[in-house]
Image (cartoon, rainbow, N blue to C red; front, side, top):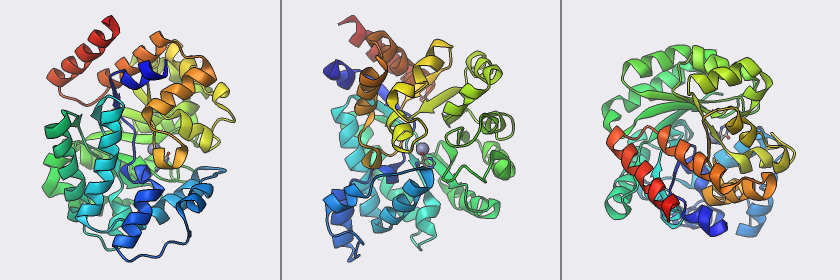
Length: 333
Ligand code: HPA
Ligand SMILES: [Zn+2]
């Protein structure tokens, strides 16, 4: 089954590039850039990845991102993730990046964007992996700062397909970003938002009604509102669920408690994703394997989850058909 899940053609729709920064690369970049880390070794750093909640993770995640300085650093970060995609038969990706994490430290927006998008172009040319890049606003920062970030992105909209909303959900509800999401949608960008990860089901409803998102990131707390679950299913508003992230951040005590398969049975368009794999103990295949081990996910359910990842991706219609065809042919083997 592990090999079947690894080779299963799939897309990843919820992956923070900064969250794919492995400790080894963090140390290498720190050395390259003459930065002193507050951990003495890769092992010591890994041991610190023991989180009680989202905020404890975010504190380390922002600290780690400080080693990213040059365009080449952002290229190397992105390329390391693409090599994992190649190894796991991930054929389409829609990764997130957090420009404000970098611009706040004085790294120019264009340095970040160029490094990432050059790697995404190489992924297409070298491996045929298609992609769409999503720029996230940090919700603990102000609306004005989100507007300033959107303005910085404006000359480069050919390199960005959509906007997202991440960071601390508690205390920063979707409504805070209503106007900036409206502006971004007017500019032709698609929209997603983290909602219902640590926050209530109401945040999922508000992300749909107020931010008018095309997809919800996490969304697992929607289960608390049966009417919302029905609505997500009938309106085909997909959720990008991240099982290992949810157990590592104690959204669920144990994988056996996870509700992804329950939502799948209820007709919700759920997908599997890794979120921040360098911090949460595994990439996309590891998340599928965790569902098999912890929840008894069947092959048929795995295929449906992979199918959803293509169907609810933002890939162009021709590419979507091609991706679904890869999946059909794999299943016919
Ligand atoms: O899971 C997450 N939630 C919110 N913000 C994040 N930024 C990276 N990962 C996450
Ligand atoms: Zn996330």
